[in-house]
Each structure stands twice: as structure tokens, then as C-alpha cells.
Figure (cartoon, rainbow, N blue to C red):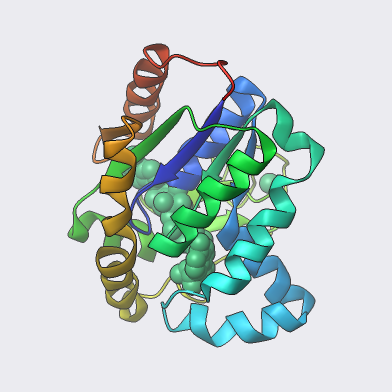
Length: 222
Ligand code: ADP
Ligand code: ADP
Ligand code: ZN
């Protein structure tokens, strides 16, 4: 099963993608995580991307398309993937179509998570993750069961993203509206777009996504 999760920053894409990854054994591909790994490694791409990300803007299509192209060639993608954070622009959506066609792969569904702006600001401002395993948490909505201890790996170190500041959120939401929302009609026209109410609690959102996927014809490769 090959899926795209679309939605503004903080909508819950990563949270839900991780749940589906575990449930279906398909790999989550987060371009944000890949870029942050490049920044941490101090690579050439990381150096180019760092300031752009911290300003809440989008990194160039050229970098992203190359990065995703390399990632999708890895063998773990053959059993299915969830794209979390890609495509984010019209050129990226077109490049993805070509990449998939070239590999004989097709998309099964595009899930749009809809969340209003005030809720996004709250979700982003309270977000933190486990430094060791990447599990996601929230100050108000999703705290670790035992204080300062990761539910998944037992780790005690947590990180907050440099761009998860109230000051940067407006720029990120604007980038979504201006550059990413325009690709939704592309997938609607292909009959692939399913919109889900992302304002609900995490378990409800998962159930809604599962209900959508139950009705999607899967496994017929192009
Ligand atoms: P969010 O949790 O806000 O949806 P991500 O972790 O997906 O954020 O991305 C963080 C940042 O990385 C983005 O604000 C952007 O600067 C950069 N980025 C990630 N994916 C892309 C992409 N497909 N195109 C351009 N920039 C990207
Ligand atoms: P995205 O990947 O779309 O940027 P995340 O999955 O990282 O979003 O979620 C953003 C923050 O909101 C995280 O701290 C997460 O724990 C929290 N969160 C995710 N889904 C929900 C939800 N349905 N209700 C409340 N908080 C949520
Ligand atoms: Zn952990």
C-alpha cells in the first residue's frame, strides 16, 4: 500500500504515519526527518537547508526531489510506504508521478488531515520527541506515561525542533496554504484524495484513516 499524508504543519501526519507503519509494516518516509538528519550531520544539503527550515520556508524542489528519488529506490519501499511531508509543491507532485511511473508503482490513497489554525499553533508549540527513537509527544495532549521516560524505548532525553516556535508557525502555515494546498486538486482529480477530520483525538483519527483504507482498492499495481 502506497500512501501520501498531506496536511499543514502539526496536523498529526507523523503521529498517524508511525501508527500505520507499525500496523501495516509499511515504511514512513518523512522528508522533514531526512532534512533534520542532514542538518545534524552537517552535510552540504544540511547546510543549505538549515536557515530555510528555521525560517519556516520550504527547501528547494531540486534538493527534495533528488532526496526522495534516492529514498524511493531503496528496497524497503517495495512493500509499501507512507510519504509524510512530500510532495509539498506542484513540481514535487509532478516529479513524484514520474518517479512512481518509472518504478511501476502507484499511489493507493492520499489522506488529507484537516485541522484549524489555532489548534495547529497549540500542537506545534507543545511538540517534543524522544531523542533516541523519535517517538512523538505533546506537553498537553500526549505526555509520556511515566514522566521524562519514553513509552517506546525508555529513553530520558527529549528534543524540541528549532522551527517549532510560535513565531515561525505563521510562516509555515502560509507556506502550506500558498505552495502545498494547491496540489490537493491534482489528487482529487485522480480520485485518490480522502479528507479526514484531524481535530479529533489521536485514536479517533486513526480509526477514521483505517475506515478510509478499508474502502480503498489496494494491491493492483499499475
Ligand atoms: P511539519 O511537521 O511542519 O509538517 P516537516 O518535519 O515535514 O514539518 O518539515 C520541516 C521543514 O522541512 C519544513 O518546514 C521545510 O522547511 C522542510 N521540508 C520538509 N519536507 C519538505 C518538502 N517536501 N519540500 C520542501 N521543504 C520541505
Ligand atoms: P505533523 O507531522 O503533521 O507536523 P505531528 O504528528 O508531529 O504533526 O503532531 C503535532 C503535535 O500534535 C505532536 O506533539 C503530537 O503529539 C500532537 N498531536 C498529533 N495528533 C493529535 C491529535 N489528534 N490531537 C491532539 N494532539 C495531537
Ligand atoms: Zn524513545
